[in-house]
Amino acid sequence: MGAVVGTLTMQTKQRRPSRDKADDDLEMTMVCHRPEGLDQLEAQTNFSKRELQVLYRGFKNECPSGVVNEDTFKQIYSQFFPHGDASTYAHYLFNAFDTGHTGSIKFEDFVTALSILLRGSVTEKLQWTFNLYDINRDGYINKEEMTDIVRAIYDMMGKYTYPVLKTDAPKQHVDAFFQKMDKNKDGVVTLDEFLLSCQEDENIMRSLQLFENVI
Image (cartoon, rainbow, N blue to C red; front, side, top):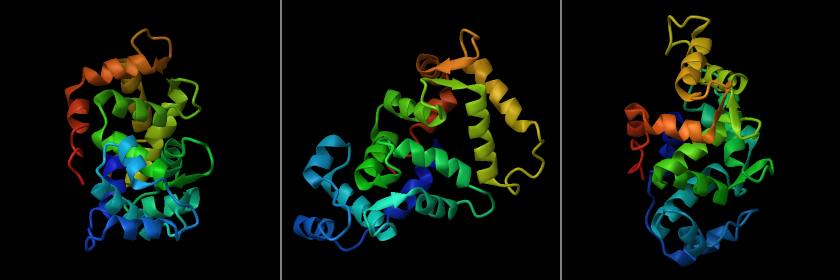
């Protein structure tokens, strides 16, 4: 989860001189896609109006059209992993953000997901992560899906991070995941199993708190 949140928030932390709400609303009319008003987004997320303004300016700076397609998302995300290939993991992450399956991410999609990852409850954060791993959206995580995710993460981090990584490391990681998560040993991990296992793990619980005050 740290790889998700850290890279998505780094470019939104640089604040520009403050401007009033009228300036921000005027900006919103000048892009191809106009996001929902700040008041509505404030009510729908855990961000203040000022935080939404900062996030919007960072989003618009990277995406002047107001929407992000998958190729652009991959280009932006890959900048943070110069020694690896982040394209596959970025593909899965893009699909998790694109909840409407429109082929693009709007500002509303971006801040809704970021609100969950940064300010959501433990259950909300874990549900979002489960949906990321549940690639085919059938309500279960199977070994094939988890293997694809783990390999994508290893590819993203690159050989310099894992100089002695063995070829069977992804399989060992997946086997350990299922040993821990698949409570009834039926070969798939349900949302309930995922929530229970994560909440029993102190390291996972600690990682969920790392980015709560990132912006």
